[in-house]
Amino acid sequence: MKRVVVGLSGGVDSSVAAYLLKEQGYDVIGLFMKNWHDDSVTISNECPWLEDSNDALLVAEKLGIPFQTVDLSEQYKEKIVDYMFKEYESGRTPNPDVLCNREIKFDVFMKIALSLGADFVATGHYCRKGKIQVEGEPVYQLLAGKDGNKDQSYFLCQLSQKQLSQSLFPIGELTKPEVREIATKLDLVTAEKKDSQGLCFIGKVRLPVFLQQQLQPKEGLIYEIAFDNKIYHQDLPKCSSLEEQLAFESEAISYSPESGKVVGKHQGAHYFTIGQRKGLNVGGTKEALFIIATDIKLNAIYTGQGHNHPGLFRKALRVQPSEIHWIREDLALRNGEQMNVMARIRYRQALQKATLYQFESGLYVSFEEPQSAITQGQFVAWNIDDELVGSGVIS
Image (cartoon, rainbow, N blue to C red):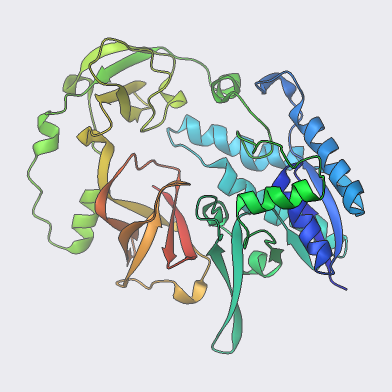
């Protein structure tokens, strides 16, 4: 009998995942990860991880599976929280959820599971795993979940073949309503529970408060860049090669205080991200202001009116050589090669037509349509049909 350790988060998805595995005849163990114990930065006064671990325990009891809690808060702080602060400090916007899967759930947690004699680790992610043969060797695929509205393959875009080979995604074939229905039939305590928002496993964290604990406030100016600024009407430089053209198209526009007018003040450019609208507290503009750029060195924020502002859009992006990741290593591009894919630059974005170009200087993703708010530090992931084959950090 194969043994599976399920990451029981105290939510409905992982509860049903555990039930399905038990039905399929696996020897199932439930494990709750405690990743945080600083209650001063959660939004509500209830202690979310305590409530979640109690729910996870109740589910395990109901299903008749062994249960224990593992405290990973030290590793979480080091691998996720410290990384987040470093990224924000340097003006990049990290994606802690993608990282949490790569570094915590499918690494630290997986090692604990394997030490308990597990053959697999299972989670309540809405995605599926495929297995094919390539030149006689097994190759694992990360496939979109059946529920198009909930597909979470993007969050797993940094997994390796080894991690995938030891993972199971029991609810990938189901839709969210079907999962809730199963939980209701079983009378599980999590059946009606709302989906968790906020940082992976920390619960609803007030991000500004969280950041302010580490990053000192520093007053600076907010500039507005006009829609018709001449920056947006420059002639394309004569590019001698495709690589040069892609480098130009993926380069963020650099603004200076002279290019706009002062419309307000902020408490620190490192608290803000491209495409952000909330938290600027600047009134009196015809359309909402969106952040189009931040400058950490000058501590300046540049904004533009309306979600169609030309400062929000770019046609291409670059991934540095060290940050290119192929789940399907057999499909990895060599220098000079290209590939047509469907790509997204954030979770829940519809897949966009794009072409990958691999050079020694990195991988370029060139979109058919210009994309809004391409943000440094976030992940771009690319698909072939419903298979996510690779990803990278936007540089």
